[in-house]
Amino acid sequence: MHADDETNLTEIELLSDGRICVFGTSRPVLEILDDLAAGQDEGVRRRLRAGAPPTDEIERDTH
Amino acid sequence: MVKEALAPAAARAAAHYRECLLCEHRCGVNRIEGELGRCKAGAVARVFRHRIEYGEEEELVPSHLFYLSGCDLRCKFCIAEEKAFDPRIGDELTAESFAELAAWGASQGAINVQWVGGEPTIHLPAILQAMRGCANLPPVVWKSDFYGTAEALALLDGVVDVYVADFKFGNEACARRIAGVDRYVETVTRNLALAWQNGDLIVRHLLLPGHFDCCYRAVVQWLSTCLPRAKFSLRDGYRPRWVARSDGQLNRRLSVGEIQQAEALARAAGLRVIK
Image (cartoon, rainbow over all chains, first blue to last red; front, side, top):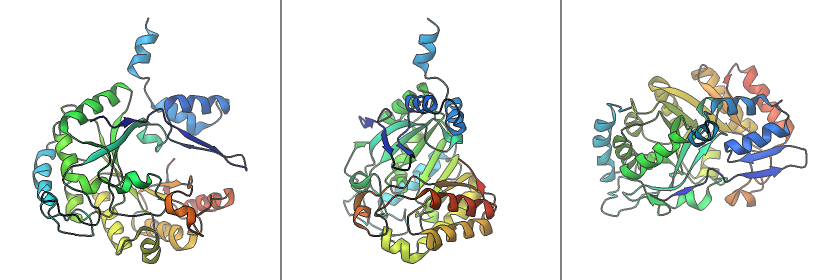
């Protein structure tokens, strides 16, 4: 099976009333949103905390 | 983890490819012989996309989503559009390919696998067979429109860890007009009550513009009366897609006020709202 891995595909819409709508949320996108919110968006923070770091990041961190 | 319920469920499910009664259209077609029912699916399940997703409910993330093509509904606002409705799109789901991708997902931090669509119920035999061959099966999340038959739902007992049910419409007229199905409310509510007995249940509702009283209020009313302890997830990110773009009522975004009104109603009804 070679179905497309769309983990890194995200659609972002900026609405005229200031809302940011995100469709397809990867960890890097969450990290950007966390930066934009200066760490004040608890929903984003909780989702970031929920995800264990990917294996390759653990490996990078230990070298 | 190997689930003991998988092998017998897979064996029983296979009969549905010869006389398909997986969803409430109850077409009864022989999919192995090439007969097509309402969903047009054959006896091969196809995955058109997979991804590690952090935008699901907090308790589910990171979730490894497997998108299967083909659906028993035809919702005008479907965000997957043609891919959801054409079961010929994507690559064949096999035990080997699923095991490989599930292992990759786990290595990326995913805490579960989640079957989505289209609609996974119409591919239940192939999905069960694929999971049966996975030695290290993560917890299983079943994201469904809940238009399946009670027989199909019974096949998931002991297999699924979390049911995520889309309760889309609060009355028959809207279900018929927007998704092209009959007996929608009685089917979904029956299945919600069954799933509630068999596993963790999250009930989702995608708030639709112009359907606050006819659909949203009715969904909240039913849940608060019949399943008040079920987790409720209000999805407020509606955007017009597919033929909804040409639907006078559905071709707009929700306002902030509409979302706030919906959140207030859920709270007032005492629903167990999750994010």
